[in-house]
Image 1 (spheres, rainbow, N blue to C red):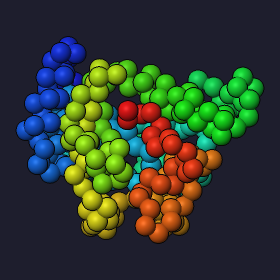
Image 2: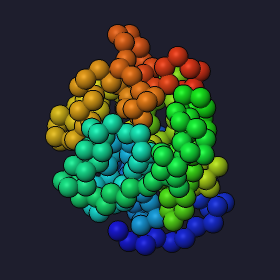
Image 3: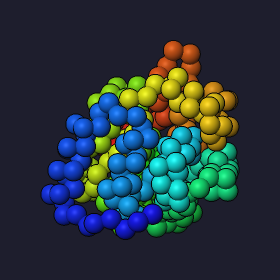
Image 4: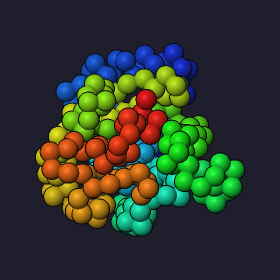
Length: 235
């Protein structure tokens, strides 16, 4: 990928706001082509490896694009396997970020099973902080957020301004439905996490993820029984 012009924070915010309006009805691939043309090597895709749809789309828009994965130390083996398969078969560069502390080191400082006692702090230490550090060299990042996933994501813009990080946030499949995702996966043979075939509708860290029940929304299996609905990466 090329090295694009560097932008100030004000310029980035203006770009995000304009693109959010201009690209609202654009196809996902067009949104990603805009992002890669605008930001070049200062654009990255983030993936939880629930599926590789956005990574696959981005590889078509910009072969060799950086795909950032957060290895929290609590992932299901299937998630790590999906990451390794994406790195092996897609034209992307998978970058794995890890927290400052191993799980054992965190347990020693905060006590075991912090995810049960203070899940917000656990997510902050193992997800939010590593991502913020890992995205330092980028001006824009892409996510797989969709408006139909949960009420908290209903207003997700296809391109928006991430004020906390001072970056442009691109959600190219924000307007997609689960049917759209399934159709794309089937048409292009995209890798998906095997857990999606085993009752999991959304895949996060193993201690905080369960299968969903009939009639529940896709995010219901995350932090079940708690008021928590997001890890903090997106709000």
